[in-house]
Image (cartoon, rainbow over all chains, first blue to last red; front, top):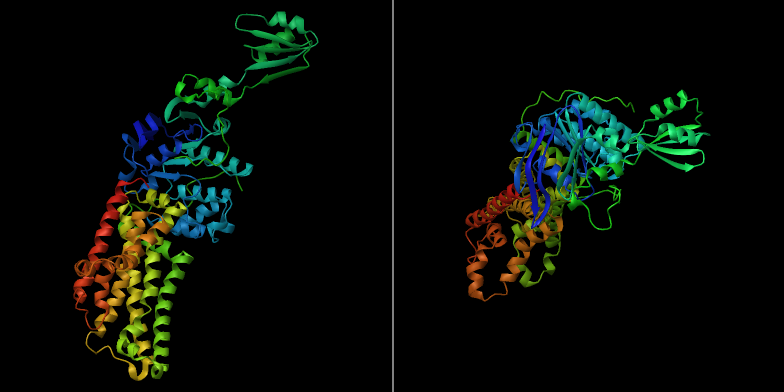
Amino acid sequence: MIEARGVTKKYGDKSAVSDLTFTVRPGIVTGFLGPNGAGKSTTMRMIVGLDAPTTGTLTVNGKHYAQHPAPLHEVGALLEARAIHTGRTARNHLLALAATTGIGRDRVDALIELVGLSDVADKRVRGFSLGMGQRLGIASALLGDPRTLILDEPVNGLDPEGILWIRNLLRSLAAEGRTVFVSSHLMSEMALTADQVIIIGKGRLLADVPVAQVVAQAAGAYVKVRTPDAAGLRTLLAGPDVTVTTTAPDELQVAGLTSDRIGTIAAEHRIALFELTPVHGSLEQAFMELTRDAVEFRTPGTLEQPLAMSASTGDER
Amino acid sequence: MSPTVQASAGPARSSGAVTLPRTIASEWIKFRTLWSSVLVATVSVVGMIGVGWVGSFFTNADWAHMRPRELARFDPVVTSLNGYTVAELAVGTLGVLLVTGEYSTGMIRATMAAVPARLPVLWAKLIVFTGLTAVLMVPTAFVSFLGGQALLGTHSTSLSAPGVLRVVIATGVYLTIVGVLGVAFGALVRNTAGGIAALFGVLLVLPAIVGVLPSTWQDTIGPYLPANAGQAALSVTPDPAALAPWTGMAVFAAYAVVATGVAAVLLKRRDV
């Protein structure tokens, strides 16, 4: 459980984070979403006590992070890809961190195995790919078998297999009852991984909603129907809250009815269907809908720009 | 790789709290697992002994060709311990790197997340590094001296001569304190180039700057400059213008304590 209460962080007179209040609950994956520079990394750094909030409080499992006698058992953090001395081997890096909390070599060896770094564990981190660095970061985060995990952009730099691996890992960790808090600037990634999303922009909370809600908003935008009797079907489908658009002589776009319902109506009236496709809106678009009210977030000219403003490695502070 | 994973691989719970001894253990692992720190530590030992021995050998070999002025300045203790300047650069740099290496790589975030009280990390680094430099540098001073005397032949002196034992031990102590200053400056500046520049600016450049001031100022300030104070103990016949040997060393140590104190306060207050 992570609780933020009125957290503000100022660097000079610029606010990186403004009056942020949210709760990250155990047992689910909570996404932390926002464009690069929105304040995600700053917030995560504050949770683990690297940065001090200017005002407000952040607690993990009821206490400030630094007040836990064995922080690695409480919180595992992957903050920015490389918090690793590149001159050290992966195993020695983990052993050094483990030593602070009296965690043994067995655990280190097991984690190296778990994250799939056995072959390179005794090589210096300097030569690691971004993906290998991320895996080592994940192993560091899991060292103390923590109840809470905080991961900043964990899929950055991973190949598709690695992304799938992270997704499954996060879901299984949440299923074990842990608190999993993971940041991303990609709504599409969060839709696949998270149960809840906390969305921030320019350091302010924009939304704290179940992912299902965002997905529902995006899903069933309309259903594409191809039928030789477009005119006939169009009449049958008409109703309140239903919009039917004819896009071609044999093609309709239907909003406000599910594909199941359209298929059933067509069958009842013995109208042949050549195609019946629910068309999903973009998640990024749905995200924009959700955050439309947050005026601060919008800047002239970027109104309809998708959330994924930059897919580069975001080093935000 | 199997997509099914469990975070609970291997025993992790049987450990308990973060303590200073555990932080020291961690810092010791960090120190010995970096090729660069092992290399620089080796340079400090080999460099100091090498310069002392080579200098002693050639002094003895060229004795007949030495100019009167050189002969007048000749001191067998100084000749055999001259390499301490090499060790000073190596140990000071290593002390700075011990801290700034973590900042430049980002490791510091992992370190401070594991030990969020932060100060134990500074104490552990100091304990590990001070212990290591003392254990390396005091014996190195003895080896450098004893080997140097053997190579100086008839021009040598011995540990039992007045003040000699003090100089040999003080050389090791001086280098150890340089290491402490290095760690403190590294923690203050948090940047390798800046930390090294600040450290050697204070140790090497500051005396030169004071050297251009009027002589009354020099006499007043000079002896209390960190390097001058520490080096007061490094000559057999005490310089009347300098502080008494161990007084000077105490002043030098006091600088290290103050620098460490400021570094500790800032470490606690600044964002990582």
